[in-house]
Image 1 (cartoon, rainbow, N blue to C red):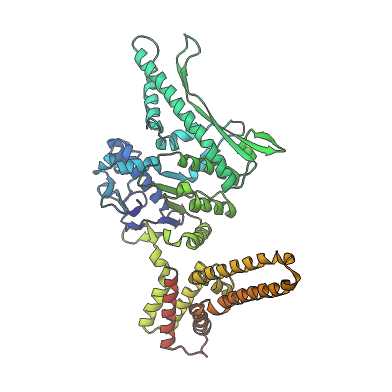
Image 2: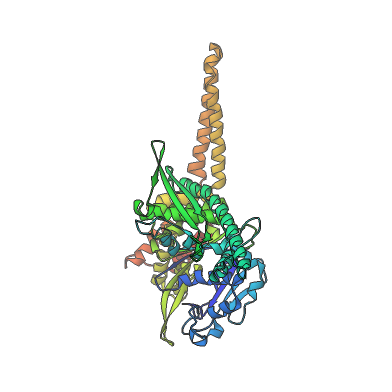
Length: 545
């Protein structure tokens, strides 16, 4: 089950924005700073979180601060009426609508959304920053990070106990400072029991993170000599002596890192000071992806939402993360939603997804626009269909008989297509590479002939064992078989590979479109030539759909 459509209305930066059509695909979003891309992140997060929130808290999300007393939780667009603020989700293969608003909180009873909360993962740059945000003198303790970012999503596999729910019970009991006196003894016993249970659940979860984390470090980021070890120091409720009050000591989640040097593990005492930011980001991300592995699995809707996650990584490490998203078996069933303000990363990711999983991704671009009537900033969202607007504009100018303008937009479309799909500067090489897709069967036939060549060559190994009288004849036969197979392969490559459409496109680009774009008055432009160019580009687009 995947998201088909997401409607965000009067929520954070969004106002009366058209619903986002996800079409059940993975989503890559570029958004310039302030355009509202993170609103998509928080809308999905709020929707799933509302399945376990109190009614009052949900109403606060969708109520203006002026409508409630000191409401610091409001997420309503400041220029909108809170009665119109909502988040609405439509899923593929489901007729049910999932809505959350001030007056609609029935989502709390929906098991699909609740299971999705415990399965999905939301990771942003703040998590990565907080992972190693410690002074040099401090020993890293990740418990506060887990408390605010991760415990919500963790259930004990045997008891199905949610760790955050158990943690809230501990905090509420501890507020009353129970002790072993008769009137508070019962709550004291409850508190000690819950702390013991929490310690055991947390210990098992932390132990289960070590192996997958180290696999990511090794296999995804190529840190072959780096090893990570997570461990916990149990939480305790105790006092030093009978005269002092009880004190609750929270659990600690410690992280140790070792570098293997000359077959000896060298401990890195202060990783936050030893490693550069890119490596720290890779370590934090490896832990978080390991957490995703150990979560609840039996959910129909699995989301992995990443907001500006990779700003600290160089391009080579970003590419490694993209490989994880594309190839990791544990993430195969997740609908991935990636948001970034980095244009170069957006283009790189888009190229990679188009090459490997073209049909599984959809792209949005977000910019800051101005509502002239209200005189406020609003988001402008450029959808996937608008990316191909050059061809549509060319057709419109053609209909209006503005042929030079039509030719100019056709030239832009040809150059965009070559750049987007083929990613090689030399046009001849682009054509050869692009045709591999159309000539898939020919490539398989070539492979079969190459295997025949290998089998024939294998027979040459036994030539020296043959009698002298037939050795020369057999070598001649073997040579003829090899020559025949190689000639067949050459015919495939030089005669049968199909380049017709692309050769035509190259001719149109060179002889019709370029001259019109450079004010070459010596070459007249004819209506029929433009019609042919438009037809060719339509055919070109269909090859990749």
